[in-house]
Structure formats: C-alpha cells, structure tokens
Image (cartoon, rainbow, N blue to C red; front, side):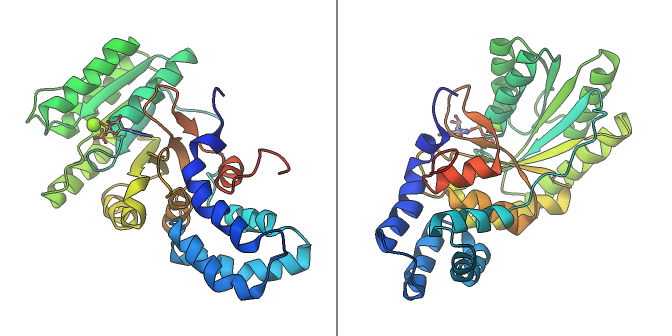
Length: 301
Ligand SMILES: Nc1nc2c(ncn2[C@@H]2O[C@H](COP(=O)(O)OP(=O)(O)O)[C@@H](O)[C@H]2O)c(=O)[nH]1
Ligand SMILES: [Mg+2]
C-alpha cells in the first residue's frame, strides 16, 4: 500500500484515540473517567448502542484481562462488528452486483474502482447504468468505461431501469462476462418510486439469471453520520442489501460511523472509500480498521 490506513484515518483517530489518550494519560483506566469516555465515543460517531456496550464492558474487560484500555477497546469494537459469512467457493459467472445509495454517496466512483480492480485481475467486466432518471448518470459511467476500457450498457433517459438491468445480466451470460456491475438511481424525492424501481431491478436480475444478483452493495457517505441509519433502512426495505461500502472516510473525524453502521444494520462492510484517487477504494479489514481508528500500528502498538 502506498499510504497507510492509519494516515488516511488520522482525523478520526485524533478525535477518538487522541482524546482518550489525553483523558487517561499514562495512568491506568479509572471508572471515574467513564462519563467523559462516553462523550468521546459518541463524538466519534460510534453511536449509542456501541457506546453503551463499550461503557458496560470496558472496565470489566480491563480488570479481567490486564490489557491496556486501548487493546481492550479494540477487542470490544471487533467483537461487536458483523463479519461477512464465508462465501461459496463456486463463484457465479457472471457475478452480478447491484449498487444502491443516495445521489452523491459515491456509487459510480466505487463501481469504476471496483471494475478497475477486477479488470486488473484479468476479469471481463460489464458496467450497466440503471439510473435512467438523469442523463448525466449514463455519461458519467461511459466516461469511466472509456478510461478503463471496460464495456458499458446504458439506455436513454426515461427508459425502464429494470429493462437495463435485465439486458445487462443477459448480455453478461451470453457474452461470457465475469462480472456485471449495475449502477442505480439515488434520488431522494419520490422515494417510493425509487424503492419500487430497486425492487424491480432485483427481481429482473433473478429472472435473467436465477442466482442473481449475487451481491447488493449499499453505498453510504460516512459524513452523513448517524443519519445514514435511517437512509439505509429505507433501502433495505426495497432490496436485500448484502454489503456496505462506506465512503469519504478521508478528511472526516466520523470514522466510528463505519462500525456503528455495520453493527446497527447487521450488515458487513465490504469496502471503504478513503479518497478520490483510483486506488482509494479498499477492502475492509475489520482488525486493521479498528487499529487504525485507535491510532495503533498494524501489529502490537
Ligand atoms: N473524498 C472522497 N470523495 C469521494 C469518495 N467517494 C466518492 N467521492 C466523491 O463524491 C462525489 C460523488 O460521487 P459519485 O460516485 O458521483 O456518487 P453517486 O451519485 O452515488 O454515483 C464525487 O465527487 C466523488 O469523487 C471518497 O471515498 N472520498
Ligand atoms: Mg452516480
């Protein structure tokens, strides 16, 4: 890696670990510090549930294990964050991914980076624009496809989003694509219209290929903080989300929100966005993330 995750999460770790470091100093953890600890945890957007668990568990954990407060906190955070289930080793071809989320969350950027990664691995990738609401949406995906040299499928604005998804999966099957990634609309107004459309996209993927879609990624902008929860729950009503992509972790102190979202929604985080560069979409590794968030080195620390 050209940079360290620890550097990318600097603002978040300053807000969380930095403040806790100053609170505890070099002295050992004191129960008297719990109230201030709670404030710091909430301030880093870890959310009520996780914060309450930590407050209840941390003193006992430190006493029992003899670990430093930081090591104990890291363990509690790791234990309370859902992990992906072991995936079937027989991966479907094409592997169909539908990407959902509100406008501006970072869907299209994430799709382009994902496509680039898959392509580097030698996969044949088809991107499809099922955002038929905005003309600019297809153009944006086409620009990426041009740049990456991947195939792209789009329709004129106003055409049926479900039909685009159906065609994409069919084309993926008939032309031997390894991956089909479907971009979707994210308008907030007329929400029911959008939710119906997403449900339809999901349904027609399954009509085109029985096991599809194999992944539904919900992209959440972490700077939205705790509001992302309500947003996510809306999307989850329409389409069964299998993984989260949390973007814009660079330049924010809200890095705790990643763990809060995963545990509140009981959906594993699959990728994180840590910048606007082409390399800035990372596989999510829970342990590395927690250590970086707490300003710890990869190992030891
Ligand atoms: N700083 C930063 N910006 C991001 C990240 N992901 C996406 N963006 C930016 O967010 C804006 C919206 O992204 P876009 O992919 O068009 O969102 P969409 O509307 O969901 O498709 C663009 O300017 C992206 O460059 C990230 O991880 N960090
Ligand atoms: Mg987009």
